[in-house]
Length: 244
Image 1 (cartoon, rainbow, N blue to C red):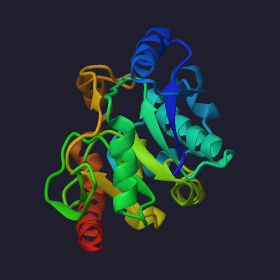
Image 2: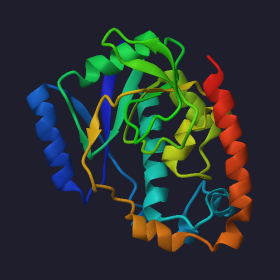
Image 3: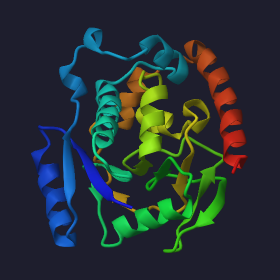
């Protein structure tokens, strides 16, 4: 397997890129920097491939500029990866903390589940985890029946996985971290490691704080359609997690 590490980094976040580059040099990793899409510089009326009406209905709130930029940035990386002849890649955001065994554990996870399209390597939670395989490094790979698991800061994706994602979820209707897990919608085989293969710096989000998210939420009565959608999504997630 030939694997590369792609890093999403905003042009204004030079400190983050320098810090991650220093880590990579110490560990002798080669990084491919992809300039992130800065959602704050794109007026709402100029957003493309974005169904804001569906986003509001699905999430019960308005979209943050950073969420839009994040979504477009991940799609940009997938497209760049497909232009290479690589079999798979690792996509990370620039607040990830690398470790010496980072690449080998990611490669071993992909080898343990040959049909995987995506394997998430970092999550905030893996409740109701159902393992399907164990890698050569002892990492359990599987799916969680409860979600969202939180964060898309680090994941491995194959060529077939990138093709499926670009084809099916090119239009934004959820935040990227939620959409990435929705294998039942993208028809992609999405898995996760039970334990995190990488770590992320706390409080480093470029998107927004909890208070910022709270300010975007609609009153409860406007979120009734969202609650119904979440019930259906939960049932679909459980069904998907139980599949092999």
